[in-house]
Length: 193
Image 1 (cartoon, one colour):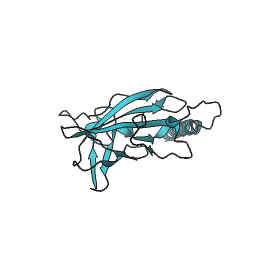
Image 2 (cartoon, rainbow, N blue to C red):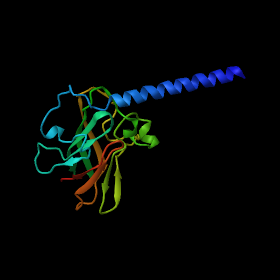
Image 3 (spheres, one colour):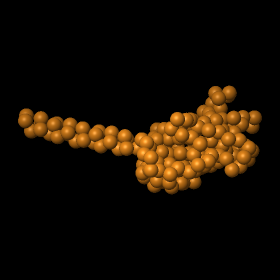
Image 4 (cartoon, rainbow, N blue to C red):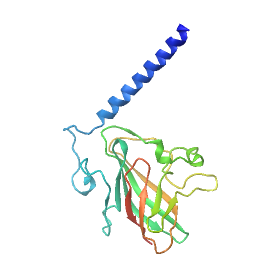
C-alpha cells in the first residue's frame, strides 16, 4: 500500500512541476520587456491594447485582415479569391511576432478526425456567411487531406510562413465573410472574383 501511495505522490509532484513550468513559461511570454525593437507602421498596428483584427480594403499593399493568435502568432490574410472551379482560396502569411520560437497549436487543425490524422494544418479554419447563416469548412482531397498548408510544427521568432486555405465558394452575390481560425481572433474579409 505504501508503494502505491509513493507512486501517486511522485505522479502528483511531476504534474505540479509541469504545471509550474508552464505557468513560468506563459508569464515569460507577456511581452512586457523594454529591450525589444518592434517595426513601426501598419505591419504592427495591432497592439496589446487593441488585440482585435484590423481590416483593410482597396490597397494591395495592405492585408485584408490581421488576426492575433496565441504565443505571438499573427496571421495576415492577403487575398480571398473566388475561382471558376467553385472554390475560394484564402492566402496569407503566418508570422511569429513573439520573442521565442512558437509551437504551432494543434487546435489550428480543428477537431475532425480525418483532418487530424494528416498532421498539423490550418484545417480548423472556417468562412462564415453571416447574412446567409452558413459556415464553410476547409475542403479535403479524396484521401482526406485538408486543402491547406500542412506539416509545420514550430515557427522561429520573427519568421514567416506563406499559408493558404481552400473553401467551397459561397453563392456569387456573397462577398462579405467572417474568417475564423481556432485560437485566433476572427475577422471580416471580402471575397473577390
